[in-house]
Length: 152
Image (cartoon, rainbow, N blue to C red; front, side):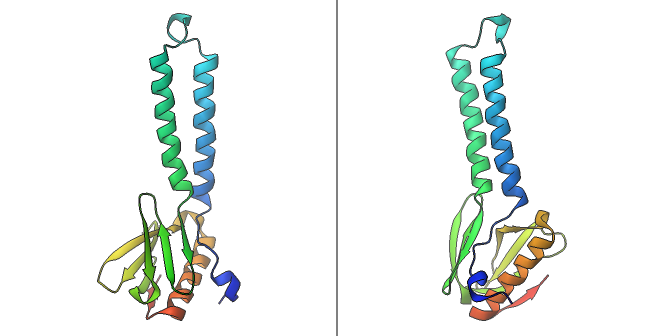
């Protein structure tokens, strides 16, 4: 088990976060190239409508990627706050009865006392051994603060 201070560090994916920020740079750089270096239709440049439209599409992509890059779970002695791609939920430790991380799961699943399962995207299979260590840390927290068992 990790030290108490390390035990309560936030959970956050690495690979997806790095890829999302890199994609933001590529999108903004690509938009800049298209708008400032590409001549537009017939070399006449782009109309204001085209500039606004392209900018809005890139902005929407950047917002989506920002949400993906900021997926995380913060923990304290009372529970866990899970920030996934589209929602944020807080669970008290006794509400979490199991942590599952099956071989085909892309991220951790939390088994809840009301019979529901919920994804926790803050620990993702794409992070390999780091993710496996984070699952062990999460399982330690659930065991320490509630009634749990894990399957991974």
